[in-house]
Length: 198
Image (cartoon, rainbow, N blue to C red; front, side, top):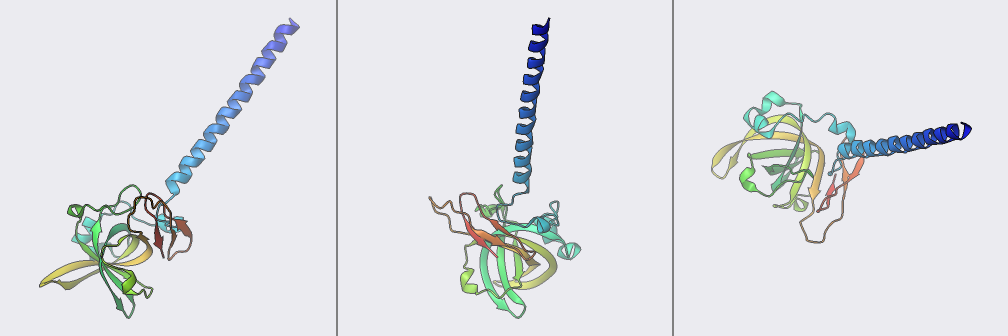
């Protein structure tokens, strides 16, 4: 009788130990998933990411920029040209959809149009060469009409809050790059291509 009791108690102890290990394993798994969900490949600080309107599309902003003034938007695109202004550096971008790594795709047929982005830092336009890909968080500031060739073009305008420039693609370039945002914080860009942010 006493031997049966010992075996029963030993069995309960073993089950409790296994259950504890099972729970600990799942706590670690859920923690990693939570961290993965919060991680931004382009280093957007959490304090800024929480203010991005994920339901707002570029198409909506393009149709009525003034309706969305003050809203934050995550966008990507290819640099077409850049110029210095009194208030900062203006960059003209061809909008491109973002992939899962928040990198602009290079299927130009998917572009919805052009956008003018004001970076409030004074950047040398020579460092923002045509063809570079960028991902940024911008605050919608309105719209302006400027000439595109011989035609008036209605550009939505955004002010940069976070800016990430992707390095040119190479086969063996798998390095991440630092990324800095206006709201503070620092991240590392990952994926196949590295980059730099400011």
